[in-house]
Image 1 (cartoon, one colour):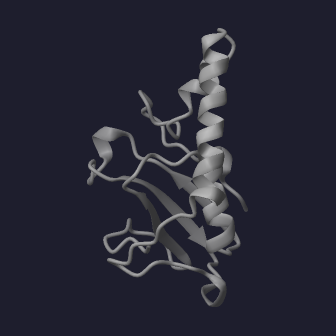
Image 2: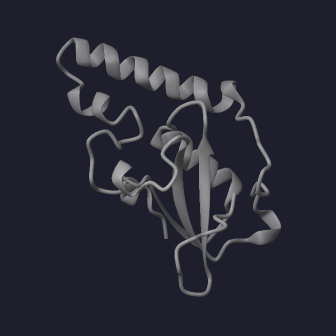
Length: 134
């Protein structure tokens, strides 16, 4: 959904939010949602660290898009709730988290497990720069 109180951006840039009341979304799920719903020239997404979150109760990511192709974009209207297809998005995320936990139990996946929550735990840096595309 478009951020009704978005950051001040130069013309041609849009501020979109991806919300999840159920759980934090993995970087792979966020990338899939952007790819499928926000056709654009370039994008950058991130999750604010807790001290900068205006709405802490609901997990959300910020997506800045340039050159959004409005005719092909799928953006929820304010107040519109869309349920993600668990088989398409969340099942893969759950499998990734289980794999990271198994690797961590064997002492091999500490870094992978640390990012299983979307990369925000204990971080003061925004997440998503590696997912930027231009």
